[in-house]
Amino acid sequence: MTPRKAAAKVKKAEKAGGGASDDRAVALLQEYLRINTTNPPGSEGPAAEFLEAILAGSGIKAKIFTSPNGRPNLVARLKGKKGNALALMHHMDVVPCDETKWSVDPFGGELKDGAIWGRGAIDMKGQGLMHVLALCELAEAVDSGEVELERDALLVAVSDEEEAGADGAGWLVSTHADEVDCTELLTEGGAGLRDALPGVDAFACAMTEKSFLWLRLLADGEPGHGSVPPDDQAILKILDLIAELRKISRRLHMSAPVARLFASLADAGDAKLKAAIRAATSPAGPAVLPLIAKQLGSAQQALLRDTISITQVQAGYKSNVIPGSASATIDCRLLPDTDPDSYLKKLRAVAASHDVRIEEIDVGTSGGISEPGELYSALETACAQEAPSARFVQSVSPGFTDSRFWRSNGTSCLGLLPCLLTSELLSTIHGDDERLPVDEYLRGCRITTQVLRSVCAAK
Ligand SMILES: [Zn+2]
Image 1 (cartoon, helix red, strand yellow):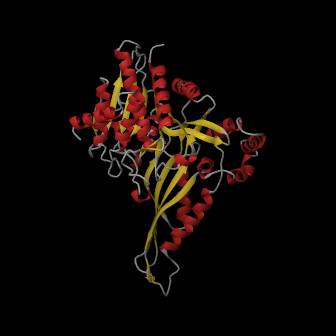
Image 2: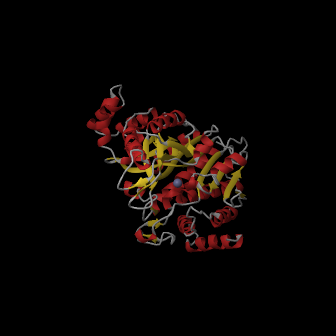
Image 3: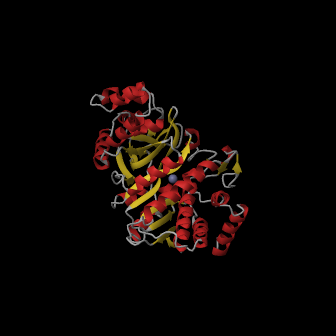
């Protein structure tokens, strides 16, 4: 997309919105969702130009840094007196979708039943536009002399998050550290949950996330005829190891940040829940954890375990031939207090006992646990104003986000999509019929605008 085309798309979206700011915000998200950034291959160029044009409309000059593989990463900074930036960061790419399972065109940006539909509506183009519009609002307030900036306001829109960020945040942070330097950062990883407990809404703000280990398991054995099976078989080694890994991954463990999350949710629960959580977080916890885990959904259970998912298994080529080699890939997600190096060492020992080798595919560590600071207080205040009955709790993201690249450099990173969404809506992330209710999108826009202003503007 040429700059002129991007500007025309923004103009078209604004025209559809009739000028009113809420309508304009909705029209811009519809337009953003129509830009197909399915990763692989991503093709985020038109998305970056689209955002650049919106920012230019408010007098903000963005820079686009392109990775050696041609993937754009957009950065825009409003300078404050003290530096000390607050960054709003999102990824422009989306995961693939099975269009046959969707009830609308995933790239149609449709407005239907009070929601904006499309791949990326929740993960995370909706939040991306909340960031962009908040920065535009702040720049206009500065230009009009209404506010002065004390801290820098930084916007970062990256490519390639859905493929682990080697052409996006990973590349940007390692090659343009000064451009994306910040002391606090807000991105995805947590969300507002409707009925986090029956009748209780809660904004779950992620203070850290699970680390990941993507590993390949490789085994060799004796090839042969299916009618005379040898003892030493590659497939059997892989299967035996997988069976043992399944046992290991069922072990439950209450880590400190998860215990904090459970305890703050228990405050809002009934006596039975309070007693259960008190038991789970007590020294006797390990004994009662299995009973509690049974009551939980898979998303909560994932916070009580170092999970191992078997994601690929490969072997063989004919029904009567025993192959001489077999492999599998596994996706391990580790709790904040599990050390990835020692965990991998343990897995290597288990694998070796089955005559299986382990190769690393990719490893990402959470970078630690962020402490509540100015951003956290501003989010808590803004969420309380916009949704007074919802609680605000510290949580752990079961998935990884790009914040790990900043958190490991000492930036305090929080993950929160400031909208209240049902678990049904949240399950459309990476699933079918992804959509964001208009009311919640606008709530998120208001919260983000207020947070950015209250953190960055001079008091
Ligand atoms: Zn995402």
